[in-house]
Amino acid sequence: MRRYLSMLGNYLLYLAVIILVIFLYNSFINPVLGWGQFGEGKNISIQLFMVLAATIGLSAIVYNIKYRILKQTPKSFWKLSGFSKISLSCAVHMVTIGLAFTFLNAAVMKLLLSYNITTLNDFTESYFQSVSFAYLMVSSVITTALELIVFIGIMFNEARKNVPVFWPILVISLIIAVLQSAGGIGMQLLGLALGFVYGSIYVRTSSIWSVILIGIVFNTSLFGMKKIGWVDAMENMSEFTLIVIASFMGLYLLFSTLWYFRKPNPSRNISI
Image (cartoon, rainbow, N blue to C red):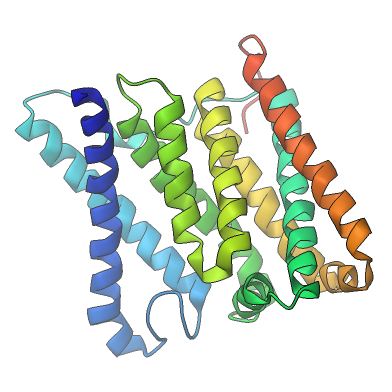
């Protein structure tokens, strides 16, 4: 029981860090910049970058204080996430997983829209229009990497010690889902699935680059498709077609993740 309480305690500790950073942003940074509360108003992607960067910095301080209190000598905080090399074949697989999530997200978004459930579509529109497209693409790369360092590299890594890995994967997936509330239930369910994929693949590769690659491909391809009109064009598809796309992509994600997880240790000759 103590091991599971320790797992939850680690998650709560770093969630508290995130909440504190958001509070500081809303209380001190927003009044100066006038962009609106975190996650709302102007420049949402820039807000996210600022909060994530500050969270990583504050987490480093909390990490060192924690282990001093415990009188333990941990590994370097900056090596905690695991920036080890991944193979070229692994990288290609991560790209296909990211693209599958893009099509799954787009199909679910337009399927929900056909039933007048607009939350996910509205959130995507507001995020897409919050900054210029060029900045959005750069931000999608940087903030995605920072997000995954925070949630997988730091929080998940600290929580998964001495417990069966399923439980910390489940908890981090639930945390990611809850944090997607701005996009409604559809975005939360996608976040839950994404959390399981991230956790499972990260455990197998022990490299943060694998999940960062998935996340970057997912975000940049989604906004790229939005820019050239492919996402909006999916509104003209029938419900049956959207269901087929979502189902096929969901099955691909499930089976490809399971397939990768059961593989022997991959070769790591080419770095990303």
